[in-house]
Image (cartoon, rainbow, N blue to C red; front, side, top):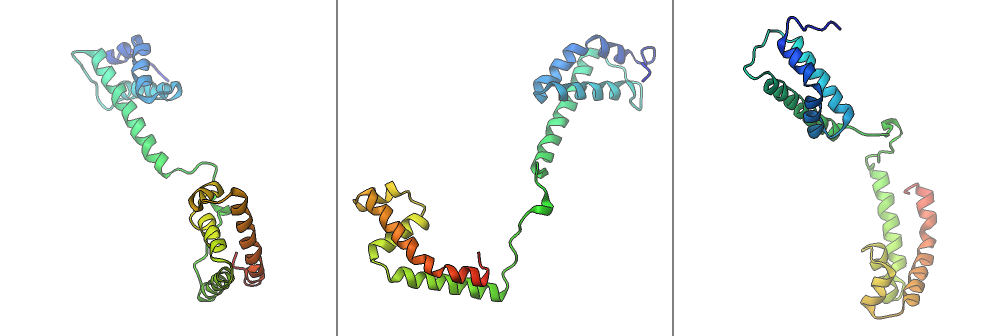
Length: 177
């Protein structure tokens, strides 16, 4: 790349103060690599610009160009980051299919069967299971809420899970899971 030192006094000022301009860019973009890119692009903009520029304070002008370009880099990065996905192969994403009427009916039948099984359990067993599986409470939190032993909570959850296993064939037959 030819250096336009005789054509551009701003280019000479830029080169003479490159380290200071790099620090300006570095403070804004926070990485050395981006600061290098900003300084290089700013230099090209000043030297290869569409018109010859004359500034009363050339170093101030160069600093302003670097600052503006660094801010542009940051804005662009923010916008790109909001749209970018890292290490995700979109072809492999498992997107849930739209519920067909048959599938919705099968899911409702499975839920109804599970509800019937849970209705056949003791009220405290059902309550413990619902607190654990539906509300997401820990076994310790359930024991504290009901004022019972942690082992009892664990046993009641196991009892409910065993009862629900009888509905497992519905899930597999209808491929609901």
